[in-house]
Length: 228
Image 1 (cartoon, one colour):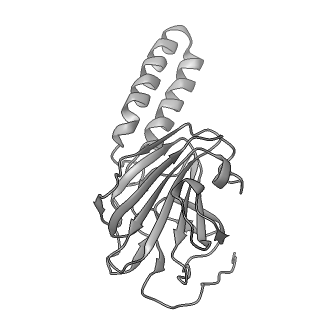
Image 2: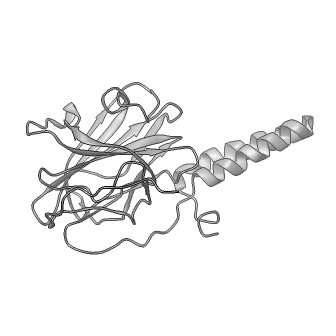
Image 3: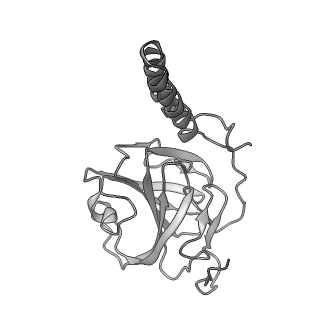
């Protein structure tokens, strides 16, 4: 119930108002079209929900920056606009469908040392090429442990707008809201070299709650099994 009746992210109010006005207009001409518009207005309200989350606390913890399903965990080079001249990193890709919460959250305590925006295409965000070709916004966060964690907001097939309120040199805490992507998208998180993910492909994430990794742990990469 809390997920359905959650607060609304402020970025959603202009869209909700627009949907509501269109619904009222259509209701005066056609009951069928009006009911369809009413359903779409309800979906719009649901899309922009901003539920409260309970973030695990602890030095070195890396928390999921988004709700959604992990589509791939692999070694990859971070976005070129970040100027990352070091080795490839482990990338965790989280796909958000149109029914997931689209508010994005800071994955770890630290300071934002770099931000970079890259205009691009709008391929389906679940495709591998979306990481390289789609519109995106990237952050590098320097943690108190001296690690660097990278998080990238990626627009999708329907999403046409990335909102990011985080700024360079800003101090941040894990679980804090830093943006939203409209409407259907992906978030990539890059772990520091030598840090293994404690989640698996196909697992569903809760932004601000699910622990992805521990920067102070040397645990091997976690394995998973699909069970009925």
